[in-house]
Length: 456
Length: 128
Image (cartoon, rainbow over all chains, first blue to last red; front, side, top):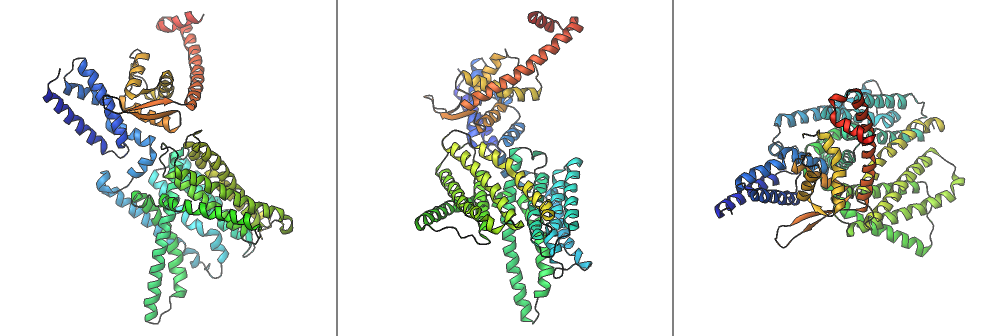
């Protein structure tokens, strides 16, 4: 029987060990409790075999294993925790501040490069006023290669991947500039709209690096995209205020900045801001990381109520959906928003927690959105012969079907999860596996639509 | 015996699922069972079991619950789910395939250089 003095010493040692373990971000306190239970049982067995408590403690700690390796294993398993750990505040992570500074220099260097690149065509007489179409088609090609380059540098991608990414961008440049688009034509606008969607996949492959084929890697990319969007909107708001003040104070001395502003502030600023926002997301993941999920929590119930009210009104009044020019686009956007709400509630969710009220609300949202969209599609299909297929209509319809399929299956998986017939990860896996479909459709629109519709 | 890290990682899923198929259990007891089953030949680093258990939980193969026994210290128990049983059957099939292939190879080796592999010779004898 060990004496009481030994026991208090042991408790102190366990306390220290516990505190040391708690500092690891990837190991949550419930996991610490689980590991502590293990440690205590091991110690009990060893002391029974005749070891002194402090000896038993040492052996038991040794058996649990190296804590760095262990916390890495936990981080790999719980990548959502790793996401928080990636925060590059130099003081906390203990990493060298020099690395963070290099990162900032590279990001800002690339932002300046993007801002300058977008002015280069102007030197050759291709200005914004006269060559609108050129900018519509090429705009994303001034920014996304640089953004991809940033991640290629940051993730140290292998040469083979880099070659594929470069090929994708070169192919895009050649394609959009060799196709003989009719000026101001519909297919040109579609190309401008779909090319960024297609190339965003290249950014994702560079972002996730070797983890692109894992659910965790793609989920991180989805998180990154959402946060980038929020940062970008914030920067754009700031840019708006900045421009407003610039206009005001120059007006006071009788100078109109309007002609200068569009080509020297708006365009380069918008291009550079993408790089800056990406760097911010990378560097300060924790500061605003919960923003997209918070917005999701706020708006999921509101959208659900709005859509249910819409459906009830539709039934009650017996009105048909009026097929105007933009109605399909409106429903596309609705599905995009609903998809965003689903994605960002998945991204912030602890996959192990049981279904709750919020999941029910989400299913209501999904079902009502699907019903509303089906009503719209049905109305359009009934009158499709009158319209014929224009490139815009076909592109909108294709996007609608792609989103509808995704949301329909998400609904099924969500209901299964609610009824306890499947784990939550099925939904996560479905969403991450679906990512290439959007890019595939966008590539189709960019490559096939213009020739098929005669470049109108 | 010092087993290859990849081999331990690959075999951990069927091992843990099979042990849980015997009955609900918790971390320490699962490790003890691994040691018993391999007659002390398989040494896992204790802590590494928990990320494995959490992965199985995330995939829906096991369910976890906290139990507070009379003695006071709460403990996390794991139970295999129907999905986990299906996965176990699948893993079993795969391992049997690998095992069968390897056995064939050992037998061949045993024929060509019998003196160096007394263990493999016994296998061949049993197989014949």
